[in-house]
Amino acid sequence: MLFGKKQEKITVKGMTCSHCEQTVEKGLAGIEGVAKVKADSNADSVAVFYKGDMPNMTVIRQKIVDLGYEPVGE
Ligand SMILES: [Cu+2]
Image 1 (cartoon, protein in one colour):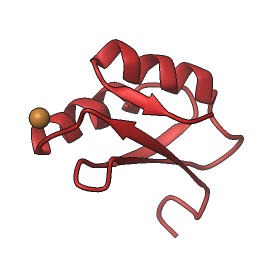
Image 2: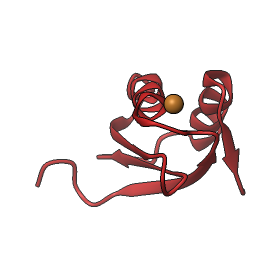
Image 3: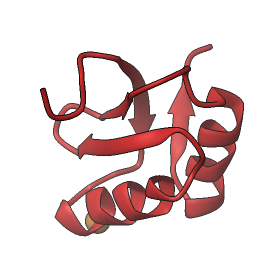
Image 4: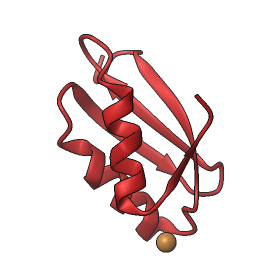
């Protein structure tokens, strides 16, 4: 099992291409507890994979905002 099955999906608006996906993936990669990030601009979705405890989603959402994109929902 590579990254386990634990993941949180966030709806993120504003990603339009693979470059945006990479920006989000790289930007979130360094956050504590994050094992892997998969962004999908077509689906407006960002999947955050983690191994142990769930990463701080408030920090992740704020980072997405800082990167210039718009997390939707709670
Ligand atoms: Cu783009």
